[in-house]
Amino acid sequence: MKLIIKLLLTALAVVLLAEILPGIQVASYTTAILVAIVLALLNLIVRPILIFLTLPATIITLGLFLFVINACIILLAGNLIAGFAVSSFWTALFFSILLTILQSIFYSILGEDKA
Image (tube, rainbow, N blue to C red; front, side, top):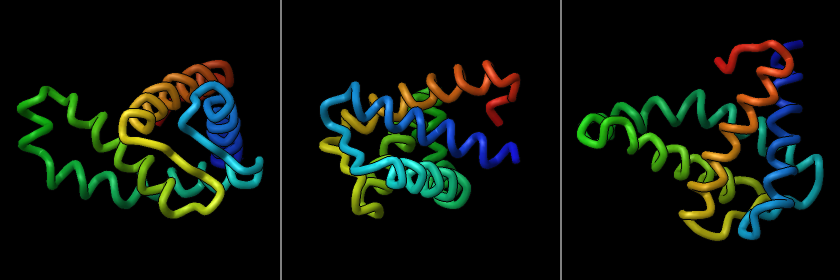
């Protein structure tokens, strides 16, 4: 049940950010739910591999390179999902930062941990 609630909150955050940011387009609410599912799967499977492969860059930048990895995950989701479009890398970077902040706010309201 917690997983479904977290996916729906992430979908809500995606819809809100698509309304605020000009470079993000989400076709429908169903697409937003699909984006939340795909982002969860990409963060589960692809993100650890990217972190391992870019570990020296992450260490040198004191962890700031993780923002680049997050933006790449958003761009990959934009390429995989037909109704979700991200215009540029910088839009994806800003979107990933704001998405993380919104998820933290939503999860804290529910009393859930982010992890």
